[in-house]
Length: 280
Image (cartoon, helix red, strand yellow):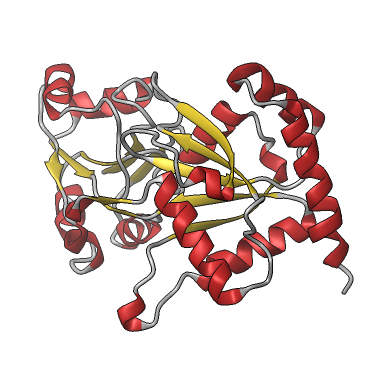
């Protein structure tokens, strides 16, 4: 049997009772730690709670090896495959599940809070007002690569008045983590190259650090102001807000002390600058 489960967003706090039961019974436990960061997590605490230490997988084990090491184990014993957050949000492990079923291996999927849940929790933005989600990666100018598609996603969302959730680049195995200030710098560079007015100096951004962790922090800044934010350790996530509902404004104001006038002013910008282009 293959059990695919999520650890959630902080330590072992979000592990469900169902997943805990399988972890205690499992003969093999694998953890994929390279696509995100889990604040408050230690292998020592995991071993104390469940009596075993998970085997850490590298990117090549899944992407190059096709997850064969996990599938072989699951073919003969109860095996748990763990991810940070929700197993099928932000990064897709559906191939592993599909391949297991092709081989006649019973599969169980157990969810946990994802980064989307964490951002909603911290900012109060409405889930039905989140448009296309995109990953913002570091440019590679030596190869002529810039994340233009991410710029396009934000542009289309603003024209619809909906929010853009930007997942920031992580290369955990290399110790590379895009911060909120890094992200702002990349957006400025994209605007300079593309020049369609999506990321101007007065563009409002909502930065979230360590969503749903005890030391979570939210920063509401204009684009250039986000360059100076020092939010501490990763993971970080960025929201480009569209039209903010009154209840979203109240939430940001009451929880994080954001001045309402800043948010109302941004709504006016979205209506006049972006949404007016929908029919052109």
